[in-house]
Image 1 (cartoon, rainbow, N blue to C red):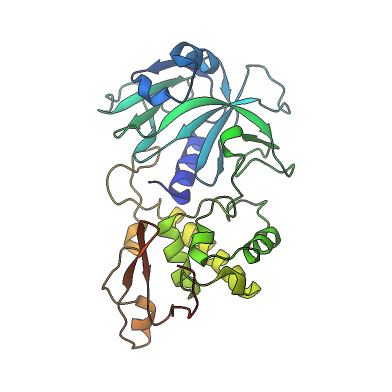
Image 2: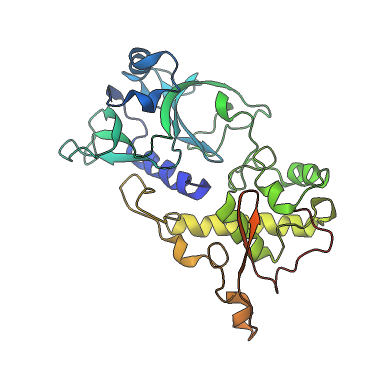
Length: 316
């Protein structure tokens, strides 16, 4: 499933290619991909056609496009948005009219003409776990912007209002995060995966961040010093920043950016998926240590037993 960097790559692509354009027509080729829009195809199409894509916003792994009516004042605040849920295999692709339809094309948005820019925004989804739907924008709890965007507005998609800000969000508060973290009695990785505490850190980037921070996933949160918490957040930002520079992490052809290109951050992974391979940090100083895989919350965690020592009284 795409994680925060992958969704941010898509967001940036949409900013470059779709921002400010009018949705002139909507083709729904598979109604299963708009099943979250309870009022059906006619209402879905009616809410989109003629509107202007005002912005592209992301919080955690949630992505939405605020919509404005033609001629709306530049300082007006949109009240509705197109929400995109990528699921396991959803792709948002910018394609020209002459490009043949993809095999798993589900929804097509035709956009107003703009020189040298593709005319269509296509939603492609092989496994059909994702989808598009129109949602309501509501005021944010803290009065800040809804998420990372080009025009910060104090509104958020209703479906994303329950999750915390992510480490790449300019409005993210370390103090608020640390205070809530210390109140919990759980393992550090469980906390990092808790979207109500900090959003956007999935299994891959949690393992990579903890490896860089030299912290074990079972470290009790109530024992975490301020410097440790700050270090793991800094490493999370660094890891996701590196992943963004590489275009994301693509393990197969299902995740691509809006131009159809795959990311290559998987080539730079130090811990995740590296079972029985030498720890790069230990190897650099002449130590022999192999990355270990352990079962964790019905998935896996990858750690170095030497530079990420297991805590004596950890939370598993």
